[in-house]
Every structure is written in C-alpha cells, then in structure tokens.
Image 1 (cartoon, each protein chain N blue to C red):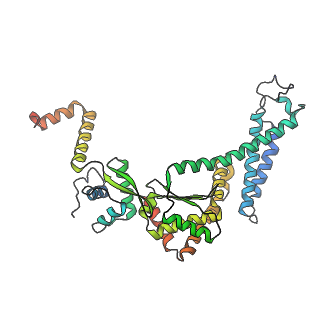
Image 2 (spheres, rainbow over the protein chains, first blue to last red; image 1 turned 90 degrees about the vertical axis):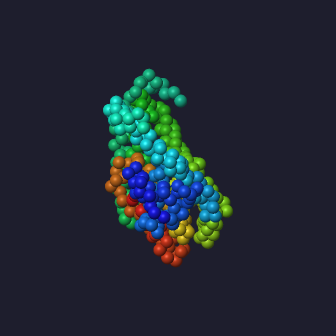
Image 3 (cartoon, rainbow over the protein chains, first blue to last red; image 1 turned 180 degrees about the horizontal axis):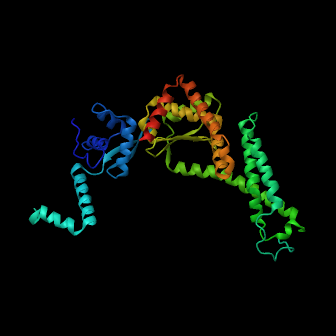
Length: 117
Length: 248
C-alpha cells in the first residue's frame, strides 16, 4: 500500500499515515494499525498509540472500549470518511479566512471563481 | 462552653508568641532529627509527621482561640479548652488522613472497571498467595495514557490503564503488574502519600531527601518483578516503552 501524503499539510506525516490506514477499515486496535504501518515506515508502537490519541483529541477519530481476555483495549475508527473530512477541513479553512480578512477574502474568491464556477 | 472572662473580646492576637516559639523549636528539632542516618525510614517519617504537627499547631491554636485573650493569663477554662482543642485537631487530622486515600480510590474506581476473570486478576491472586499478602483487586483504568499504580489503603488495589495494555506485550504487562505487587508488599503507598503530604505542608521538606527513599521503593518493586519473572528484560522494556510514549 502506498502511503497517502495529500493530507501532509494539514496533519503531521505520521498522523496522515495512521489515518490512511484506518480509513478503509472499520475498527482497529493500536497493535493492528502498528502492524500495517511497520513494514512501510520506521515507527514504534508507542508512537502509533500517541498519534491515535492525538487524532482522538482533534475529534478526527473516535474510540470505544472492548473487553478481551487480557482486560480492556481501545478500538479506533474514523469519525468521518475521507471526503467528509476533506470537506470539513476546506470549510473551516475558508471560514477562518473570511473571519480574518472579511471583504478582501470574499473579493478574492469572487475574482478566483467568477460566476460561482 | 462559654468563657465569661473573655466573651466580650473580639479578635485578639491570632498568634501568641508563648505558643509559637516553643512549638516551632520542637518542630525544627523533629525536622533536624529526621536527618539521622541511623534511623529507619518509618522512624524518619514519624519525626516528619511530628514536625508538621508542631509547625501548624500554633496557627491552628491561634485561629481556634482568636478573641480569647484572657486564655493565656487568667482563664479558668484554659486546661479543658486546650484538651478539647488538641482532641479536635487530632481527630480532624485522622479523619482527613483516612478520607484523602478513600476519595482518591473512589475517584479512580469510577473511571475503571474490575475484570474478575481476567488473566491479570488470576496472576495477582496467585502471586499474593505465594507471598502471604492480601489479594489485591485489579482494575483497568479507562485512559489511553500508559499508567499503573497501586494502593494498599483499606483493600489493596492495582490500577492498570487500557493505554498500558495497548502498547505493552503480555510479558511486559505482567512485569508491570508484578512491580505494583512489589509496591503493595513494601507498603509503598503509605510512603508515597506521606511524602506528598509532607512536601505539601512543610516548606522545609525540600531540604529532605525523601525522593531518594521513593526511588529505593521503585528499585525494590523492580527487583520483585525481576525475581518473579527470573529476568529484568520485561520490566526494562516496559519502562522504555512507557517513557517513549511520554517523550512524544
């Protein structure tokens, strides 16, 4: 599997790699994400755990607790699919630009996309 | 109990020098004695508790009897009042000392789940039986951070986080559990609680090397885990993985 770097400017490289692993699947354990990533890049299991926790804090992924033989474990899954996530990033970026620069930003968008095209 | 001799007084001296000076002197003496190398750690802790008691005593005394200026000179109720105060202070201190770990336990038990049939519970039961200890309850703390700690107040309990079992292998998790059992065996939670209490109350506690005693406790717990597993490989790699997590 080729690593997807299109999100590299929004997220850190490891964050975007972890996200590309869990996007197609439904729910994954930390260890499962690690075993998919390990052959592709140099990474420690603890780093994957840190990144998944960070993505959870950013509300990009969600998690649930599963009971197993060794106690409890977390299962991580994406909150939004790839398209929805990209849409929300664009939305928040555009909103931030309009909030920060007001009319200048709106005028630019009108020039850039004349006639709303 | 109404004291007729001073009932009209409003807010007298908050701190009386006749109480403050000897009390601070005794407090300092206890603190100085706690540095003696020949004393055991438990003896040192008792001296430090004495140091704290005499350190805060004059302030509590002044607060309790503020407005009662006659007390120090010609109050007929001075003796019984003093005894009542002392009993109240000791009672409050005991209740607080029991309440703090209890609140701590309630807080963490709410955030965790006990898995009665889990392999970690079985291991804890077996090892504690072998060493003639009270069987601790093993709880799984619902947090992604890798943490583990134990308490031996009331009933011994071991808390291991979900984050810990997520990043450690079976043998490494076992090593952490054994490390915590080692703490219960050495009654480390009392040592830790005491050192936190002393450092929170006494401004002189920074001069004391309580941290070295706590480090010794950690070393003892590590040794216990290594002895049970017949290797220090697992406890060392568990520690390395946990510190790796917090370094990021």
